[in-house]
Length: 343
View 1 (cartoon, one colour):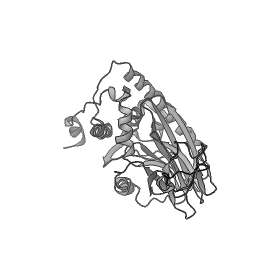
View 2: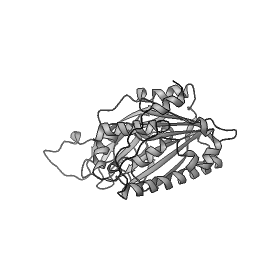
View 3: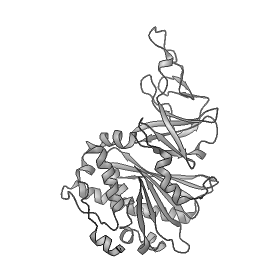
View 4: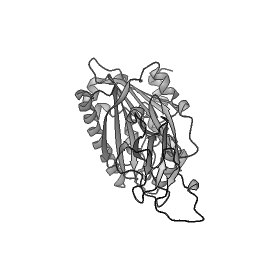
């Protein structure tokens, strides 16, 4: 069966219902079932080069802090003091004095999470500091990218990333370091944005600059496990390398001709999405202006359309549609993965 015939005979799946994107009741369910039990991208190893360096972040509503111990090991904890839930940090990153100290009442924790001192707490016969260490979070590192797992039932990260590893083959990322961080806030449900990322169907209509850089007629999207790979041959002088990867549930890997950009699609409640961009360049060199310009242009276009789609979902006119069997197989797969966890 040739490609045209297979497309003609393939089914056209019904989309997820609009309530998935507008009903706030889905957010606490997704936070626990989708995000807590999956690996979340946290940072790159080069962001914490020295002992006692730390970085704070929020992963789907879970405040976390990652710190490099004096032994060189990276460890992560919920950024929540065991006393009365105060934060251990004030800024996004820094270097500590060998302890993580609660900013509320001054409780101090060692860098492996043990409670060292409950400042001026007073004598209490039923209080044992050994029972009040920080809540730990699991960490895994893949190609220098640090992933955190809030829950207990986490998948095998290496196995999950295997399709992307196979596509990258012997590509060397060992000299990549953080070159730039950027953040964009979108007024849409996180799934609205993710589904936009998972297909190239909209590229000719929405991204004229990107469309001019690639051979869009050869744009191909494949689903392998819970990894989505976008391949589009780049034209001469293009900023992009022609490869985009996406890993369940919310991580994009955009490969440029020099370095790459990790895109975390972070839900902020049910109604907003924060795009956290981490640009990795050879030895942390400045990101080329042309790369920034192209990234900003594509992001602005995606922001506009995602917010417009969200407004239309909110309007109550649309319930379900149909997905293209030629272009939107990854969207269908994503919706099936979500459905298995929330329905």
